[in-house]
Length: 229
Image (cartoon, rainbow, N blue to C red):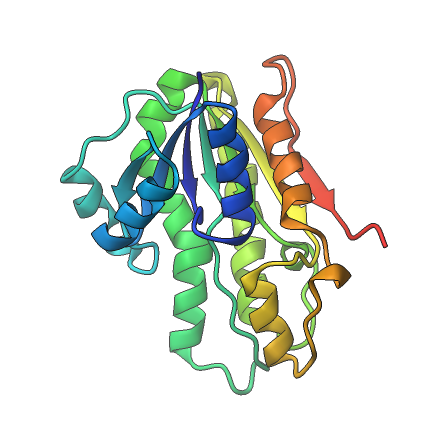
């Protein structure tokens, strides 16, 4: 039975992945922003445990983790949490930049750093759920795309640094996916939302689980998922 630490398990792609792994009997450790959210998640997934830490405040993650028991084994670390806020460069204030960089880039780097001894001992797989915006930036997407371009750099560097320690690193770049985040994006774009127009979160979950389950003699370094219709 494998142990997976998952961020963003509350909704969207993260929930789809957690559902899949829990259903097959794997052990889940769910990162939650506070104790109340932790209880909600562990109630949803009986037998799971939670680690409390606010990704929006990465400077305090080290302190938060020091007050809790870190799992002795982590077979996969799945960075799935993320936030988005669109707007042209001329209108984005520093607060908006900081919020997206903190959650989408700095917090994943810090969580990885704090768990690295365990990841090394476990020969873990680290999956960064990126975005098509991590490969190409478009108008009004500057802050989000910058955070995701940075996440690609983080994954590429980690892969090169930790290969000798047996850590596999995968970046997954989903296209637009039917999630609450996509609902927000469509609203900010002034457009309607129809889940049928986008990739199902279950389809993205399939690619993530595939990367985790891949035999140890191989690694998927980069995986792009696009709508099939």
